[in-house]
Length: 330
Image 1 (cartoon, helix red, strand yellow):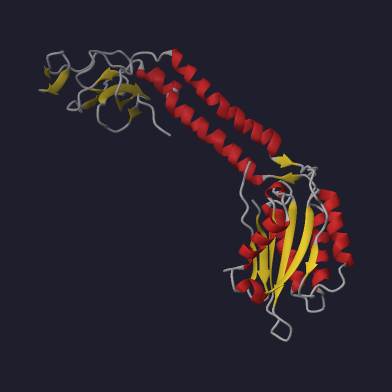
Image 2 (cartoon, one colour):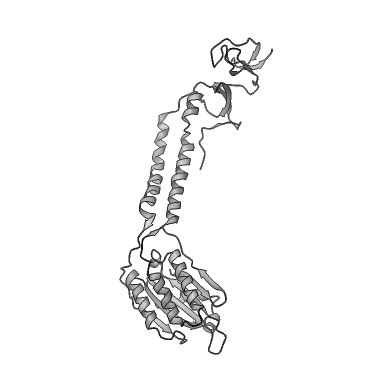
């Protein structure tokens, strides 16, 4: 369905259009530095110091390489992201070659346009360049204000009643009756098939140009419309950088990369260190320094220093039914 490409008024400035744009959960196996429900505490050593981690699985067991099969789930998303960057970041619009009635319509019911020769030439040039047919209609404020809340709604109805396709760009100009204050409004209405060419940026360019021309006191209405079409026609079919597509593609790649990293729990350095980890009860917190190498170790888990293998100081312990140290007596 057609939609606004932008508009403006004598006192309210211009406004943009209503363009549409076509175009994680964590792993169940977790390792954290702080306690969480269902986790047990493990101890390993790094840089001659003890490191405590909490995990809800046996971290000493080597992870199955089959988990990398999960990467197959992410392949389509990575492909989609790379395709977006490779083929859609820079786009060259294609001319519309649809089979439709491309006759330019100019309906000046209020007689405000004046000489339309330049305007029609500019609209023909635009049509030849893009395949989009511009048309212009005028109306009095009193006519549409009786039945419509705004000119955009009226312009929409004008479009759907006048054209059976989605390849037109209708400009509706409204003004007060003769003798009244020059209280004018205008609205652009474009068909959906024009969106790849009349993008939000191009529509905004046209809107600003036309609003600027309408505000010139010495410029007729038809010449103002002609000047706006002449300006937008110059570059509308040139290749353009699609920043939104680049941002969306990068978002897909970054999001999927982070999600895959978290789901696969890829930490090579930590995984290697965890293979030597041991379960460590929460009550075991006493640490001592080795007399031989100066490394720090947790009392109750070693007969030899985990850093240099020298004998450690003797202590008396309390143990649980599985033989794990639960307390140090001296």
